[in-house]
Each structure stands twice: as C-alpha cells, then as structure tokens.
Length: 295
Image (cartoon, rainbow, N blue to C red):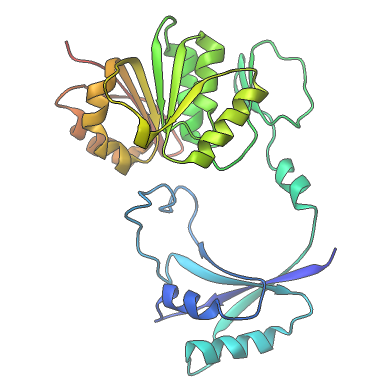
C-alpha cells in the first residue's frame, strides 16, 4: 500500500463551486468540497432541495493526489486553471493507504443506549447482554445509532411507546427505529423512505435482525390509513412541510426529532393547529418533540 497527499487550498474572493468545476479537469485522483464546520454547526442536515450557500468561510476544496506527485506542480496548475494572480495558499497532509473496509468497520462499535438496549454492527463480537440488541450494518440509510437524534428516538421508544399500537416510521433510513419498535414492543410497524437505496439497506438490516418489516417509497405511500403513533426523525425543514400530511395519518400521538433545539419553536408553531408538541428530550443541541392528538 502506498502513501497519498491531501492538498487543501485556501481560496479567497472566488466562487468555490466555479473553482471546483474548473479543478475537476485536473488529472488527479479526486477534487472535493468539504465543510469546515463541526457537524452540529454545519448545514449537513438542512433541506437538500434548498442547500445553503457554499463559501470560503464555511467550506474548502481538497485535492487528493499520489504521494509522488510534486505538490508545487499541482499548485501551479491550480493557479493557471483558476486564473489567479499568485499561487494559492495551501496545506499538505500525507497519509498512508489502508484496508478501507476494515478501517470503516473499526469506526462502528457497540453503542449502549440504556442498560437494556444496545446498537451494534454485525461484525462486532457478540457479548452477553440482558436486553435487546439491534444489529445495523451502515449503508446509504441514515441511522447507525451514533447521532444524538437517533439516540433520542430510541430512548423514547424504549421508555414511552406502548404495546398494541400501529406505528409508522416516516423517514426510516437504515431501519434502526422500526427495528427497535418491533423488537421492544412487538408492535405492527411500517417504514416510509424517499430513497430506494435506504430501503434496500433497511431490508438488509431486517434480515440481520430476523425481522420482516415492510417499507414503502414515499411516492407510493398512501395517506388514507391512520397510525396510532407516527415517528419521524428527519430534517426540521422537511418536518415543517409535512405537517398536514402527518395530520391525516396520525391517530393518537406524534414523535418528531432531527430538530436542533434552536428550531423547536418553529416546528411547534407549524403543528399547533392540530397537536400540541412539547419538548421531551435534549442532547448536544438536538431535541425530540412529542404530542398527543387533540380530541
């Protein structure tokens, strides 16, 4: 295995998207735009249909090249392609190649949600555990148990979801919440997701857990059936647009997460005409809202 170099360009007074398009013509391994901010500060979870601006304060361009490629030659090429008056400033990071499958797997370990609930990837060695184990193989669907909002939803399911309920997991991602509902309460659960690849990932995780939960694409999902409990852990901006749809399908109670604490009042206000949402949990700037249907 060889070595590689990441070259981070420090560009000012230039359109990053335009620079990215021009630099993509370089004969190198890859060109990427990366967020400089922490996950909690970034717009990673904002509405993908209305992305935030990409600028030099919040993002950076990173060039990946072979270790043997002279960095100064690359910088000269970048200056020429971008039409800059002087060489751009940059940082160089050298790293060793590795078995990326094993490395990726090493990033996912057992996550203890409570004394009686844990999430773990299927390749982790099984240990004695007096409780429910949810096996999740990371894929294209959101939800491995690491994000605070997933943990908040799992906590609510374990502590508050009653048995003998029909449940809808809207924005089911990897299937982690629907699997938790099935294992903990044995309730009838349906998952809905916009992405077919995520649904495929959810079915795969169902197989690992010995379950047969049904999932549907959102474009094929009917709003004619009501569910006792609707759970949705997706973007706050999307939750706002779904208020009237959720009104049609919620029979008793609604659980919403994927919401920054700073966004909770906007979401509560959008739903107030038909349900009183209250703050139940908070964790790392994220929160979970819960409400019972008005009689």
